[in-house]
Image (tube, rainbow, N blue to C red):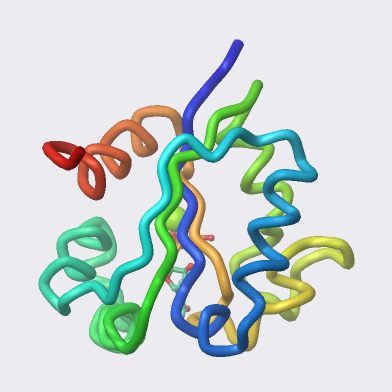
Length: 136
Ligand code: IDP
Ligand code: MG
């Protein structure tokens, strides 16, 4: 069944100019890019997005990083989109991500790991709303 997920190309990957290669990979994996926007998120936007991690020691650094430059936010559609995109991204820590995954290829550190993906269909619905609701 067609499912939706939210993907983000993080500021490290945009700065490295690998956004195009990541988008190509997304298309090669059979996703339809239903929405796409490039923006530089304000600190508060990044904090709201990662509110679930508010109590983590890396929250301050993570939200500072996410608002440090442009990101590309995408609404992706595919069969099994959530799990498939997480498999293509690889493990959170690029050092542990399998060869062939985006984080293995382009991630710099556990924080600057090139891409985001929703961790479940409910999270995906919330995250898609967070970026795309009330926008035409
Ligand atoms: P995920 O992105 O693979 O779902 P999460 O645990 O949800 O990983 O963490 C969200 C983001 O927070 C990660 O993608 C990464 O950028 C950052 N992060 C996670 N764990 C750490 C850490 O231990 N140190 C620094 N940053 C982290
Ligand atoms: Mg997560």
